[in-house]
Structure formats: structure tokens, C-alpha cells
Amino acid sequence: MKVVIASHNPVKIRAVEAAFSLQFPASRINYLSVSVDSGVSEQPLSDQETRQGASNRATNALQLHPDATFSVGLEGGIETIDKQLVAFAWMAIHSPDGNIGEARTVCLPLPMAIKELIDAGMELGEANDQVFSTVNSKHQGGAFGLLTHGLYTRESVYTEALVMALVPLVNTLY
Image 1 (tube, helix red, strand yellow):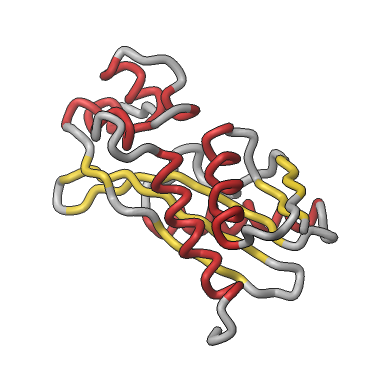
Image 2 (image 1 turned 180 degrees about the vertical axis):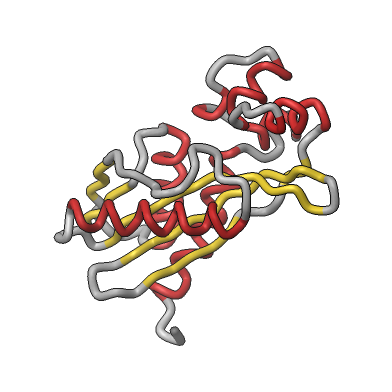
């Protein structure tokens, strides 16, 4: 099995590897990491834009490697809901036969200090680093890890959502 991951981010790569290992424990899986365009903003600001970015990444990765069994796009986004800024991500998994599985992570309410930086034009990872005095948090636990003190991490919530995105691709009821 060949899985193309539309990211070089180590957190995203590990999440994909963990999810596929859970769904296909007996399979030998070859992972390939590629950089592709999302076709959306650097920092998606809505559920719809984030979902589109994940789908675009999966599509573009599959176009680069049409021999892949699956291509995976992951896109983190934010959205303000009733004055509360929340973070989440969409996962999109495409297969060459046109089947698609998608799922979204849980939402994480973000503190006002982060919202203010984002409202000023900063990307979430940079805002996290500034508020929490960290470096490159998006390649580590991300906002999920920082705000839950490691109970949940970017990798763990991405893994969970990827397992859910695989359901329509592995369950015969779909």
C-alpha cells in the first residue's frame, strides 16, 4: 500500500502513520510526503475554507502520485463562533477510484490573547508561539497540546479524525 501525505510537517506525518496503522495493522505501508498547494489562505478562517484546503491537498497529492493507494490532505483552520475563536482541522483521504473520506477534529476554544494576534493578521502557530513563549509549536503539540497541558495534542486529535475519515473507505456499508 502506498500513502501520499500532502505535508512535510512531522506531526501530520506521524498522525497519518498512526491512523493507517490502526486501520490496516497487517499491511505494509509505504508513506511518501509531498508539498502541494492547498488553494486556500495560509491561515484558513472558516470551516468551509479549511475543508476545501484539505480536499485540495489530497487531490493535488494524488495527481502527483496517481499510483498511490490513498492520498491524504490535512488542513488546520480557525473560525469565530459567537465571538469565540476556535481551532480545528479537516482531514481528506482520496483514493484513485474516486472514493473520498473526510472528517473534522474536535474544536478547541482559543484564549482572547491568541484571538487578538490572529485578528491583527498573525497565523495560529505564530500566535501560539508568542503567547506561550514557544518555538515552532505547530510541529509539536500545537494549540491542543499547549492548552490541554498535553492531554490532547495536535497529533492525537489529527490521528482520531484520520481514523474517522478512513471509515467510508474501509467499511463495506459505504
